[in-house]
Length: 175
Image (cartoon, rainbow, N blue to C red; front, top):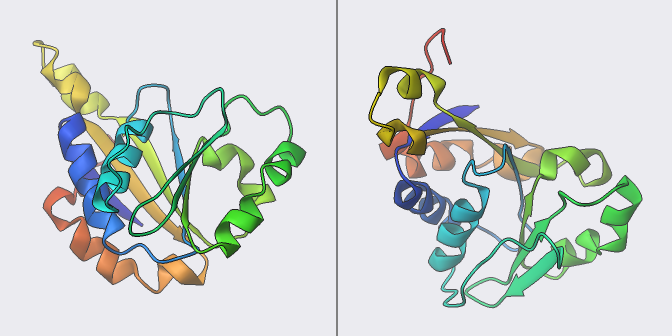
């Protein structure tokens, strides 16, 4: 498990771009966190690093957006799904087999319906920074917890740590 900390949307995108350099065909990333925590910003930075020039937006109502870059990026938002069966109907298994990278916002809610081989990234607001800052600037501070599940990302955990080293954050007892 790796903890990283970003202080702006731009930094979240930079961190995602660093991770995208490690992306391989068939990779799956599950993004988890509250509304406004940075999941879409992360995907925008990840996609830009894959060479995607299109505007990446959250597919809340369309459920899936696909973008062409160095690797195809399948961007899903499963917030509105009512059952795990609906995840299977989206064709996630086929997306993974087709050689692209799949990023799923709210992915923690459907993890049990997916292959157990992914990088989970949990976004949270840095409550300590927010409580110490009266200006409101700390509202952009995020803590990202990167957890490899399965062999694909576990084998790359050192490379992941190196990629996100500028943002490494060792949580204290309050985090």
